Image: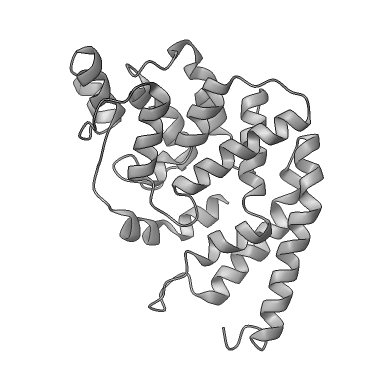
Length: 251
């Protein structure tokens, strides 16, 4: 998937430059009179304008994600699905999660796929893990848990190895979201309507790569139990698509 994100880098930057909105550091200044960030902090994570003061850090994180994360594959709705599915999987396995850690990581794990946080030629997981403190600090988030948030963000992609329950269930939820009907919807949402990259056949190749690479990397018992259905859904979609498009020649 690292190659997948590199292939779509140009698409992401052109489609997602929506301008900076609502930083949580701004919320901290408005709500608590916090000191201005140092030059080093500003360089590490660009400041953006503050929204109206949120009632709590959950609302502030939710607002930032909803306003800034605009993409059919890894935008705000993907954050919602990852959070909900991670909780479902952990509950099915009777594993207790720290919801502060999971909520922050699920909503912010792809923040470095968007301006002003993205960094060219760097893995978005690593960039987000390195700067997430700059948007959570001062909001009321319990910063003693920031290392667990960083760890979950850093290993959320299927090709990485999570450690700890929040990291594991975010990782598996994120992996499962590449499969099934939702996986097809995410990838085809990226297709350029003007014929640029990715086009339809390229989207099919991405889905085929996901079918090949993702299932074995779902690690939790509850996650593995969900793989066969999502795998079958995506396989059927691709088979039907090939049949109805003369093996993609008319796609």
